[in-house]
Length: 102
Image 1 (cartoon, rainbow, N blue to C red):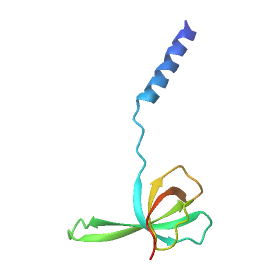
Image 2: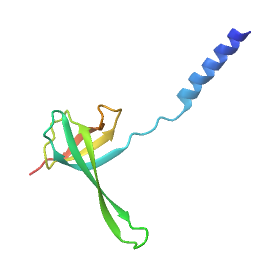
Image 3: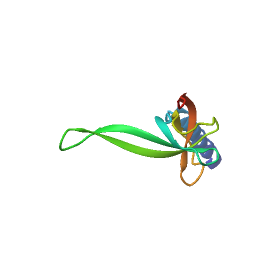
Image 4: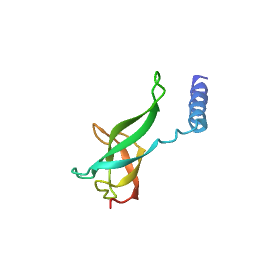
């Protein structure tokens, strides 16, 4: 009797996993600021945030290390997507180069 109960619990967990919606990966667009590493670039992403007290918009910047198989160079605008941890600081991957540096 216990064996049958174990099977139904396992089947229920498989169904629950398939029914759960898969989380969409985050995408960001930014400027390549460093390409001195092998297959890694540093991408600077800018965003505007409203100041809570003064209600002015402030430009905030974040830097992301991204895995680059496409060969992006400094000054290129690229799209990066969230991925599994590839190293201690690298959790993003370059998907496409939107605009080459002039």
